[in-house]
Amino acid sequence: MSRKIWALIAGAALLSLQGVSTASVDAPPKELSKETKACVACHKKHNPGIVQQWGDSKHYGASVGCYECHAADASDVDAFIHEPKKVGEGKPISIIVSPKDCSNCHEKEVKEYTQSHHAQGGRILGSMDNLLAEVVEGNTAFTTAGTSGESAAVVNGCWQCHGTEVKVLKNEKGEVTGLDPATWPNTGIGRLNPDGSRGSCTACHSRHNFSVALARQPESCGKCHMGPDHPQYEIYIESKHGIAFRANVDKMNLDNPKWIAGEDYDAAPTCATCHMSATREQSVTHDVGLRISWTNRPAISVRPEISDAKMGLPGAKVKWDERRDNMKDVCSACHSEAFIDGFYVQYDGLIHLYNTKFAIPGLALYNAAKPLFKRQVKFANEIDFVWFEIWHHEGRRARHGASMQGPDWTHWHGTYEVGKHFYTEYVPLLEELIEANIHSKDADRKKVAEELKAMLDKVLSDEFVVNEETGEKSTGHKWFIGEMSDEEKAARKKEISDFKNRYQSVK
Image 1 (cartoon, rainbow, N blue to C red):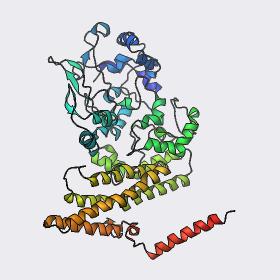
Image 2 (image 1 turned 30 degrees about the horizontal axis):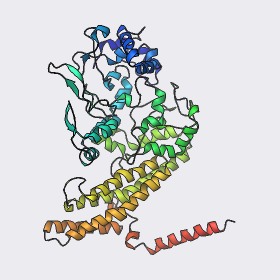
Image 3 (image 1 turned 135 degrees about the vertical axis):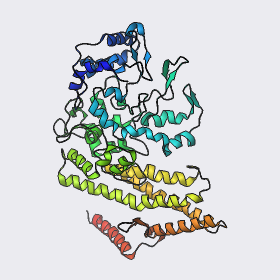
Image 4 (image 1 turned 90 degrees about the horizontal axis):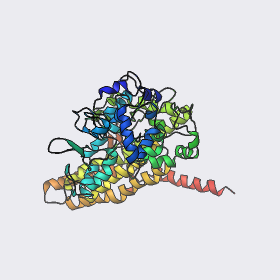
């Protein structure tokens, strides 16, 4: 919703916040508008909590109130007249304050946010994750005025983090009567708003205080970044960073306008420190992908510019090594160059292990086996779930754990689970498919089974090529078929012997 009056409002609020754009602001307001005063007078009686939250905010200090954020043009799809006798005739408002609205003042922040993966969160609506919640876990029994039937699992789960398309309800006269309760309330990071914008600033800057201190708290990110498939919050808690934060939270200066690691605080970093906040060399960014050097969301980890290119984002032009340098700059506030470089050697090693030993051959085997599945429907076969959890849950945990220095998540919740299920569930299921079809009278099924067997044999004998350019092969599987080399057996035996001798010698 465009607001012509905005050019005369809220300048002081912009000037009081870190890294804020002022291009669309002519002058700060001198006092609260009469419309906002009318809003406050009513809501103070009925919703005193939100008035108090706003009263504690920097918006209040700059005379930016309810009307300045919620005012709408009559042509806006979600505009309606609210309490005309109090607010004023011909003064429509909208319930949703979208990133487009916030951009009237926070232009730089919204531009960065819109170009980030956060704003693309709504793409889950067509993903396997949503298929699970819509079909496997749910049904179409959840019906509202604006929907023909949704899965309650999707409404209360997926959409609350990723966002959904917010639908506007209207009466026979075309007047807005509200928002469809299947799609609102919703603060999903990639919410599709009625005005065409994507996202929700209140996902991190909770209304109506919009506290920067709250946005800097790791718990803000933990609302979504937790659980079996992306436990960044839990990993952070386990890490030395998370331990230091909890022990020194009173030293973090979380509400300081200027918040630079090493200058305004040095006790610990938070999620915001590493991915968004200012450093001595970088300004604040709302594009959370500009400091990561691996994208660990897919089955096979890829460089982030590849992922950005698939989504048509400007980040496709920002190479992974430049992003890594951005993150190294953050780390340098507290760590030496050798320490930082050593960490990345370890991290890259884990990604390479996962990609080459499990992900690349595992995905190839899955695709090769598909024609033999009993049911040609996603998640209708046991092997669908086994492979999905290997990469989507366990594989992600291992990769994210390594990226954030969470050893238990990297190993016991990660690579251990990957290895256990790869060898004790995934491979046996593939072998069952081969055995059931390799002697089939159906020539096509017989051929597929033979090709699958040949591929599986190559994987388990360390002959499967994972990089055609270099000829690199997937290794580390021979132990499973009892063909570990004599050299490796001897090395393992020596390592065990050295271990025993080392500790037996301690008195």
